[in-house]
Each structure stands twice: as structure tokens, then as C-alpha cells.
Image (cartoon, rainbow, N blue to C red; front, top):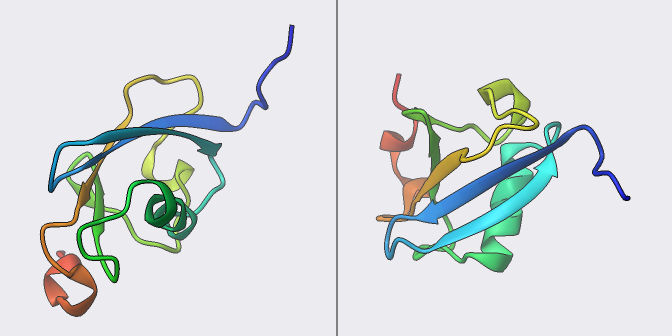
Length: 97
């Protein structure tokens, strides 16, 4: 019986523009930037230059890890919203306090 590495986090990302879900299994040490890179390949946002990822009402910052935001190993149904409703890379609204 094969076992998964102990630092693997299971998450679902939902694209806001159409409600499509995609599951990911990543290291809890993966950064949000790395997750966004995977999303651009597998669940392309409506505006490829920018989208926001939101978990528990917080906008996730690229430099932080999944673990930093409380995405945990062994916890199911960890859903992240990919807000691709506009080009967030050109908007100051992507950084609320």
C-alpha cells in the first residue's frame, strides 16, 4: 500500500466566472504563487494577467505558503475561490486591509 507524503494538502479551487471546480494536491509548503501558476495551466482564469484567490474571506498573497493560511494536511473540503471577475493585477482592490 502506497502512502502519500505527509505534507500533501488537498484543496479545491472554484473559478468564479463559471463555477467550475478543480482539485489539487500540493505540498503545504507550496506558495500561492505556485498554485496560481498551476491554475493558469489547468483552470485558466477569465483574465490571464490577474485573479485573486480567496480562502476564509482572506485574499491569498503569492509569497505565502498554503500552510500559512491554515490549509492543512488531512482536512477535506478546503475550498479556495478564484475571483477572475476582473483583471485584479491592475487593481488596488486586490489588497484589502
